[in-house]
Image 1 (cartoon, rainbow, N blue to C red):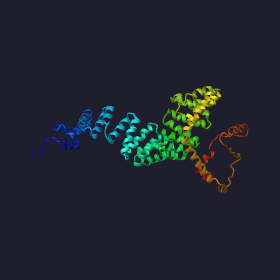
Image 2 (cartoon, helix red, strand yellow):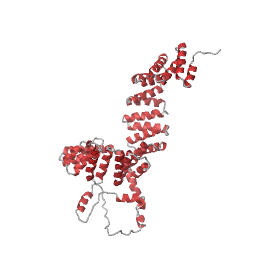
Image 3 (tube, rainbow, N blue to C red):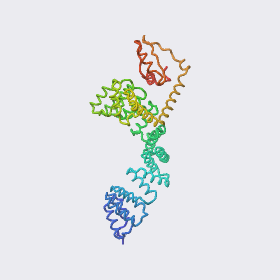
Image 4 (tube, rainbow, N blue to C red):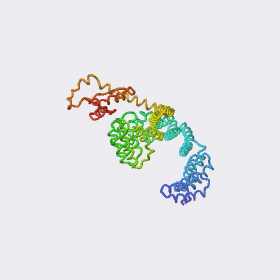
Length: 455
């Protein structure tokens, strides 16, 4: 004679067969016969939560915890049910006592609430007891990053990446933390590892290209973007690399491509304007600003360009007003230098000194990246020095002059050594035309394939 009494085993079998309603009925009938069965209570709580009945599920989990305060699995499930109901503080209370698994969940809840300091403390306890928990090392790194602890974030994420180098979010988070800490080479390595894991992820490719550009490797940045899908973000990052390489005509074309892909994009207009000004084409700012206004770009978003244009027109007071409207995060060092120059011209010495002081303080914050850029530049000069030797020049074939056009003269000098003043003097001669700092040889080298092929 078979035993037809409801049991937990039969309820589990029904649940596995996909019949949740029948499983709940079977489990409730079994619980009626054995109301103190913690396994049945926990199972019923799970079934109700799976059906979206979180309040009922929480009730069953709470009965388990009341009977056995050390039932950590029921505590964790109770906390998750309470979270689904929006009862965050009650969920935290459910995690208040227990081992690393509950502390792990407590940290995640605290992090979701933006209570990063408390979350970090919980995560630190977890990894102290479970040092191979790569997910919590990752979470700890992110909370430390949110708290402004750059070194702590790097240390935690480095540990996560050491344990699980194959997890994409870890490599991305590690790269972001390293970049925030000014460790650009290390950040690039992390993003390169992420690209190996996910070659088609455009945001990762863009970030790797940005780091290559910041390290003074514009060509490498362009190579990363070469086969990227067309779009405004890709066009702007390509334009930034081209600008850094002083290939300004191509940069302008890329910025125009970005504006075409996303009309009215203030950032693209702004960066295009800055590139035009730096290439000595200040007169192009007026039509650019008019075009941006016609596209609905707010004038305040392009305050920096308005200030540059007015400065070129000698309207110092108006230029200073616009410069002081520039958002703090936009070109902060250059903006403060511009304010300083304009204030000095306007006779506002106190403002000029204050702005110059702010510019120096802001520039000093970027010392790590500045040192890395300097090292990259020295390495670049070192490579060129190894190529440009007397024996290399001796192997050149003397060129045949083309036409009667006179040969150019190259004027070379250090910054602040008087080259601009000499430009002004030379431009006073009727038979002399002075070019601004246009990278003519860089363009030639790009076309022929590098300095070594210049001959």
